Length: 566
Image (cartoon, rainbow, N blue to C red; front, side):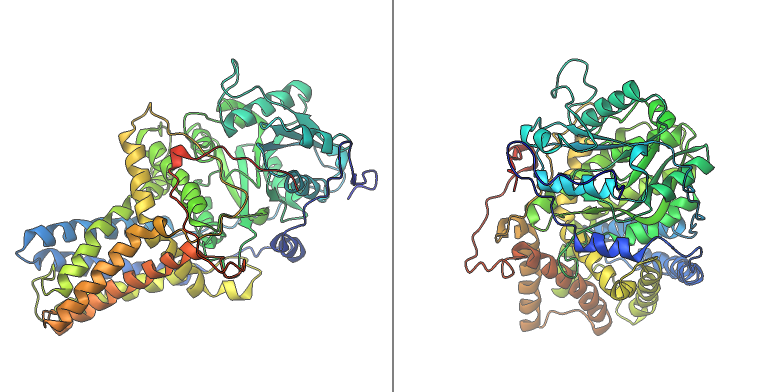
């Protein structure tokens, strides 16, 4: 920390203590940023080739072996072909990874960087913790132009920052004339205008969410070094982590994305901003017209706007942001991931993608395909139930099913394990891909109803209808959210009842088909059951003896967020 700045312990109107640093942020800073320059791609490519080969055998066999009951076989074949095409798209996208070389700004050569922290009602101690992490990093204090852009117009926050080396800024009210965007994008655009108006010499603009403290002491040295070295770079995105419960039950760390897929995006100039732990080149940001306001959130679309104009992107595998709190109750998790789903599907369906290369389009369209793949559950669960009743989608009584299906499953599982080995992860347990992959699958299976609803809203709403954005809560609602898992519970219970009845009435299919059905159906039942248990996550930890049901809250009907300091 710069010796000229001592953190104020109090302010007029009361004592404001800085929130405690997240243990994960402390661990990330202690671990450092010396990531390896290479990543093993041999296992990825060998297993990817096996996936292609086994799919080439399975698909023709499946289409030629469909049962004559078209009402189950045809939907099953269509869903299977979609899932296989989606998987092969990912195999192609993740074939190559690229790790950027280290480029660090030398001491004494640091340019001035604007750091914009948009706020909107978050607890003051949480915001102060974020600011402190920015000011205490390895960067001269006089080379930081920190702007706290307060969309909540909180007098307590203003008082708390009176003696801090930051600029407290209040953007125009939402929907006010001249404000470019009503939500967070509008706040950011107003803050960018403030920076440009006051410091024309600043070339670099960092955006940092109010609850995201730094996870790297050398964050600006590493990121600005990349931007200075490549004049064509529009932005640099880093790893985002979060303070989570043991085992990360809601997969908030997203290791499969940040420590794997983003390296593949590096290889094809397809990385995109993730909101925090991110630094923009000012000229690139102004070239795209500021942060876009057409979609729900500005992150993904701002990256697409830069890439389609010829700018380049970069992902740097250091921990640039650690959320002090992550959604770990189902209503809040549904809200956050549902927003991401609407935002992605809407942009990929109705947004302007002209100028993107075919490889860039492949990466971005794979994101939409991931959400649309949730609709296959509507086919797969009935297919499992009907198969257990003795009417499988395939009219094959021999062992051909096993000989064609099992190799594809094995190849796919091996490929998933290969691509899911977290790169540069300080946690030895997390370097084992099995647990992380399982958490990813649990959340993906369980979130299918949310993704279906979000995708329909995005597609049917058209280009001009923008859904309402709701801020993610910065606190947990620890109750038994049983109504939020009714769809998943109904599916599991229905299949289980049919399986028991089929066994009692001896209607099960032949052994070969039974083995496949038990594997396929059993896996999905276990995944959904694991997700259902998330409905009461945290209750025992909080010492709650009673399970209090929580009423459902629709995304567009959620009450405004109100938080008090302390």
